[in-house]
Image (cartoon, rainbow, N blue to C red; front, side, top):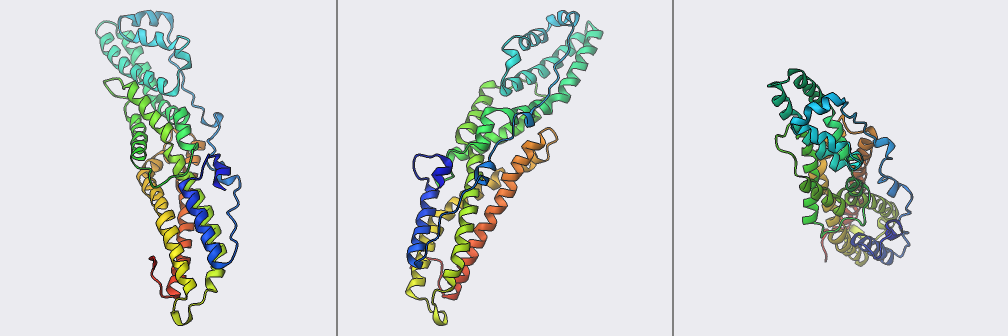
Length: 335
């Protein structure tokens, strides 16, 4: 049972459809197809990498007291002082990202101001600016890998996808691309909107779209593989003499249409829809040099390999039914 794995209170749309599909086939064929046996692979594939595997080391600026007092004439002094407070030293990844982007903006402004009256200080600020620009990919990677909302969105599905996942799913897709775009903002002249960033992260953490996609495709891959293997022989023995469909063949065609085509396949279509919308993002992240190998392996395992397994199981199941319907001269519609 899926709920044994997911810990859900009631049956999901997918669980209900798969269970009813299996039950109807059992009844018509007079057999007993057991539910797919779940093992740890279903949930372990969504196990988020450990904190140590995702650790990002961002070396802070080293500012001596003389330089610190010298930068009090520009906003840089206040920004640096904020980072050295108790709260500043325990910033969440999103807060750290906002701070680092603001720091880059202020460093550029202060370098220009200092150049007019203190060339030595201006040169030092330019060095700090270069250091922070070089660290920017790590700052972005920390936001992507270590935000609590991202962990929730990528690994903690509360339920599989259903056919009603629409507007929220689109918003979650947009939120993920928003975060991807942030890696290009190190040269922004206007500080980022912290409220907007937190709202986009909240959307990802509440909808949990990637985790839902990946869980759904693994459920379908496992269930359909089991059903296909168990149905091959019973379907082959259903009588359709000279291509004339028997009553049993017609009933089976109706079960296939009403429960697979009408109930299960639309959920698969949702998987396909969101997968292809997000695939450019996953491809980009898998090639990022800033993201950790463990994080990229997690993305590739679910967004690429998990999707391939789902597609293969879906295709094999449909091909089996096409062979049966062709032998009995039946169209895949309710009759």
